[in-house]
Amino acid sequence: MPFGILECYKMEMVPGTALLRDQSDLPDGLRGVETARLKHGTGRFSHVLLVPQPSDSPNDPLNWPTWRKDMVLFLVGMSAAVVGAYGPMLGPGFVPIAAELGITVEILSQSTAWLILTLGLCVFFFNPAAKIWGKRPIYVVASVVLLIVSIWGSVANTYSSFLGSRILGALGMAPYEVLVQATISDLYFVHERATRIAMWNLFLLCGIAGAGFISGYIIENLGYKWTFGLCAILFGVFGVGIIFFVPETTYIRQGVTSEVLAKTGIQDQERGAENEKFDEKGMHVEYRQLSKRITGNGSSPDAATEAPYTYVRSLALFTGRYTDAAIWKIFARPFIMFFYPCVLWAFLIYGTTLTWIVVFSVVNGVIFTAPPYNFSVGQAGLTSLSPFLLCILGEVISGPLNDWICVKMARRNHGIYEPEFRLVLMLVVVVLGTAGFYGFGATVHYVTHWSGPVLTYGLANMSLAFASTCVFGYVLDCYPRLAEEAFVAINTRNLLTFGLTYFVQSWLQEAGALAVFNILGSCFLAVCCLTIPLWVFGKRIRSWVARNQFLNEFMSDL
Image (cartoon, rainbow, N blue to C red; front, side):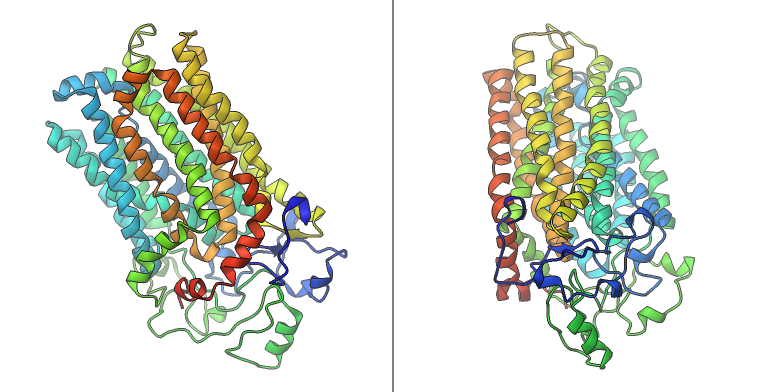
């Protein structure tokens, strides 16, 4: 029972559990593993076994040079940052924008709610498309859509046209809600993921938090339409980058399918046993006959010996089909995965925390422009500087710290890594979130100096930075092959966000900031407490899911 995590004795190697280090003090169940036959990291990670094990193909994204992987992440991450800003960027100017459009502030806030609802529904349609045809065509189409709706928003003169541009904008935003995390899973090994997830969160949360202090002055000096104009410029620039420098990252690896290579599997392979599953004592080698309908990268029997793709070849919009599963099954999987305990936990943690953060962007433009603070629109936007800076600090710390904790705990655990090691930083999440949510309500209610609500606003956002690293790192490690489905399930939180943002303005007016944020803080603490049973029983839950024949067959792409 390492660190209080209950062992499972019904499987020798539970999915998600991995041998991460070469050590001489391995448990009895792994003493037969010949780690010298496995691929290792380089440099200071030369002692770390690569999980997942890459293929021998130079076209396998896991084998790409680090600079190329990071360039892909930078481009999709920056696009995600602008997507993050697109939703809350009007928050500081709600009062003057509502007056210009001839509507109430409540109706204007509801336009954000409708955008979020559409976003929550769209992810269910983009996920099957990405699973079938890969991620590149989805990214390209999304970039084009975002450019068009941003131009539309910059010239809309009526509320109906304005609302139409916002709602259709969700079509372009949806892929960045679910595919960036899966792209990280395509590109990086387990010991690298938390740092990259933190990088993606840095882009996204800085977009959400940074939108306010930039857009506030744009709205005040140039008018709100120029916020859409700036988005159009940025989506155009990063869209060109995606078209020319983001190849397909989905790849079919036919060989290694788990985390530790069994010696018996190697021996059987060397004897020429094909199309056979070997002893799953850790990682096994499996040579499976792919369906003729699967034609994507890596599907060729000669993939391991093929030449590197040319630059022009890598720009192909469609690279083939990546699954033989029926569309209805792919569409249904997120609904089933929603009830996987670790995914449900992730939905509750990420969903409540991010929804509560969105509430800040909806109400701050009203709270800070009214007495006693009486901020201008530009000054109200500057309140977002606190979460912007603290998000940067949180992401810079959380990703590398999470990876470091995992490697250290794996060493203490005889070189064996458990995904539950990702959950340690939830302690930091609880501290920051408690101070942020309860503190914001109290400082606004008791009319403290403006630095009080501004600082607590930042602490709440910083808690999301740590929570995202824990949530997505844990889910990726538990279900790497089902990353897209898992993130679609988690992002049903948009429906929760829609419900709250739709009526939060009227709730705030009736109950006051103290009551509203006390309730939000209490809900946040309640869902964080679910981390304790997940830590204790997480491994047994993963084992139960892996032994469920129906789930294995229904979730298989091949």
